[in-house]
Image 1 (cartoon, rainbow, N blue to C red):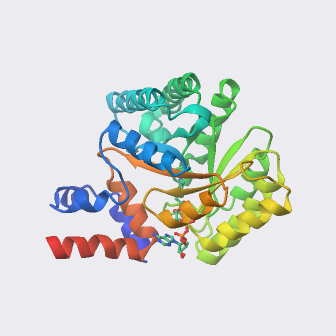
Image 2: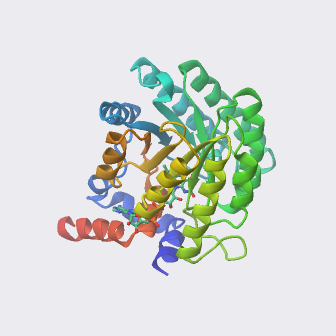
Length: 311
Ligand code: FDA
């Protein structure tokens, strides 16, 4: 119930402007978002690299409704990749980028898919020059087919482009089998949007079971699985599946969000696991933050406590 309410709130422009202008918001947001400017993201990437963690960086923004903003988002990624490259952080894919197609034009009417493809292609080309990779984030289920179609087109030129699949969708186990092919990078997450029961498992235990089935399909295949979860049980199961399928460390990776379970990230990295941290940056943090609150009451409590004590 709380989850659904919060996910609805993520779309409210009124609540958004209230939260964004609350005097303490920015301080609280910093736990999950290292900053608004490109150098903030580069600094976070350097810090994480210093502790043997890999990074994927997301320039925050989604559901872009005008062309100028879609272009500006593309340009922000190009500048980011250049700065990461200059700082020596892209070598061997140590820092890559995550892109939401809706932020680069997917929702711009009839030509949306074409515009998003062109912008994503430019970003992939810059990533290629910098020696790193791109992963396409996955948004709500109405965009899944279009995003996977764009992925296929991009992979013709850039076979290393990664996909995200969401275990809460009923279709995902089959998608995992389709994408578990040589060279295919697939991030498996539970899924963060408010989806109807017609397309998604709504019971948490069902989502977890689906996650395990999907992880099995990916680990058994020839691709490169990226297990994105903070769930201790699923992390353990992921490690066990890797052993069962004879995978060596580095032939798959774990992924977690910036600011969430950093000790666990470090513990896994210290054990020799490849761990990548998803680092979002930029001004458009509202939707991202509300999804984090919807996932975990403790995150909401943290935010409300900060408002109450300082407001
Ligand atoms: P969940 O939130 O169910 O938590 C399970 C358990 O993990 C908790 O019971 C607790 O034990 C532990 N835990 C979680 N948070 C904790 C905390 N703050 N402190 C301590 N313990 C904690 N979604 C999407 O729809 N599209 C996308 O493209 C992406 N991309 C993405 C990238 C990466 C790298 C990650 C990690 C996640 C995403 N997501 C996503 C979000 C994802 O779908 C999901 O909403 C969140 O990861 C939360 O799900 P968990 O698997 O972490 O489990």
